[in-house]
Structures are given as C-alpha cells and as structure tokens.
Length: 369
Image (cartoon, rainbow, N blue to C red):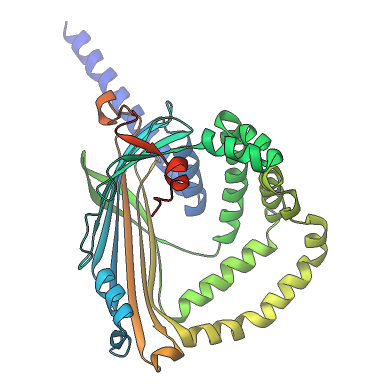
C-alpha cells in the first residue's frame, strides 16, 4: 500500500513538472517572437472569434484660445466638445451575424438626448433606435442594392459577390496582406512590454501590454520611419494587389496601376527621403505633439483584450493669431466574454410598420436629418 502511495505521489509530481515545462515552453516560444508578430497573430485570431463583448470609451478635452471664443458659433462647438465622452457597449454574435450595441454621448450644453441602440439583425439589415426620432430607422443593404439596380446595374450586380462568406474571404486576404505590411512598417519601433492587471466586466485579468510612446519631434521621426519601411517593403505590392481586387468590383477605373507604381517606386523613396524633413518641419509649425501613445494588451491565450490610444496635440493656425488650440483625445477598448456570449446577451427587436421606418423611405419623404 505504501509503495502505491509513493508511486501515485511521484506520478503527480511528474505531471506537475511536465505541465510547468509545457507552460514555460509556450512562454519561451511567445517571447522569441517580435511584438509585431505577436500582435499580428492576435489581430488574426480576432477575426475568427465566434462572439465577444466590448466596451469602448472616447474622451475629448478641448482647450481653445480666447480669440476663438469670440466667434459665437465656434464657442458653441467648443463648449459642446469640451470634456465630451462617448461610451459604446457592444455584444457581437459573429456566427449568426447579430449584434446589440448601445452608445451614449455625454457632452455639455448639447441640449438633446444622445443615447442610441443599434440592432444588427442580419448581414444586410440593421435597426437604429434613438430618442431623436419616434421610430427605429432600418438600414437594409438589399434595398440599397435594388435602388442601385435602377441607377447603376453594373455596380448593383457586383454587390452579391461582396456579401457573406465571399466578402469575408476577400477581406481576409486584404487583412493578411496588411498584417505582413504592418510587421515591416513597425519593425524599427520598440514598444515597452509589461504585465498589467486590467478590470473587465467579467473581473480582473493580467495581460501583456505593448506600449508605443512618442512626444514632440519623436512623432514625426516615427512617422518617417514607418512610412519609409512600408513603401520599401516587399510586402507592399502583394497588399496593393489584394486591394485592387476589392476596388475592381466597385470601380475598375480606380484600380492602382501596379506596373507604373513598381517602375516609380525607387523615385518615390528617393523623393520621400529628400522632402520628408522639410515637410515635417513645416507641419510641426502648425501641429505640435505633446504626446502620442498606443497600447495593446494580449491575454495568456494570445487574444487582443485591451487597447488604448492617447493623442495630445497643440494646433497653431494663422486664423487664431498664432494662439494654440490644445486637443486631447483618449480612447480605450476592453474585450471580454470571448466565444462565451449567452443567447440573452444580445438584445433583439421585432420590426413592424408601426415601430420602424426604412432609411430609404425616410430619405424619400424628405424627413431625413
């Protein structure tokens, strides 16, 4: 009996060590990848999610010069935007093309209700509910297609190929090509990496945060590096090729001439190197960055769970007499309940002639906003 207990204990220890070794191997494998590779994989995984819940918050802080407030119309806009906040709370069932989104705009002196509800009922139909209008406004892509059929049959006939699985497949190809280009574009940017605890609607979780931070002239230097890396990347032409396939279905005349672009590419790079510093110096006289920060956080399974952007800038325009307008935008998004939404999480609505009106009908009646 004692031997059996000892054997069982040894087996448990071996299993524990094996599990720890496996976890360590996964962490080591992740650590060997660049931040761009890890983030690119996270973006790709996001496209395959069956369902999710997300909350996004946008905050605006505007500090105008005194001279701008002398204009009554400008003063009204400034008053409305100062310390404004927008909150968007959404539940998405990607498998069934359904979603429920609420939005609230909290702004001073707006003098009207600014709460919205949006019901995504199918791939083609969405209903918007707001106190600004007595009925829900229904946006139906099929109605748009019928209208186009009468005005532009060629464009209307291309719409089915851009719907459903076919659209997702074509978008995926563009996305994949864009992610390859993104990795080249950001290859010289070195984000700070840290472990941080974030509060989600489901509770606190530890995530790995990648944070890009720039201030002053660093912003323009980073833009210069990223743009040059993109236009010199071997991944640019494949990306443009996939974009062309999408453009061609809607407007063949807008397709990019890739042969001409390839011939002129070296000249474009040379001209960019020659002119960028001068262009950025002129731009900096108008727009001075106090801070630009972009953060993205991954959970232990490699899902993108958190992102935030801070854009703090000082704008100097001649019409403001050399005075500066300071603008600070911050936006963060938290994602949880990944592939774990319940049926009652997504609120839906039954549409009828009494509670809803077609957007096309609304426009036709002359009652549009």
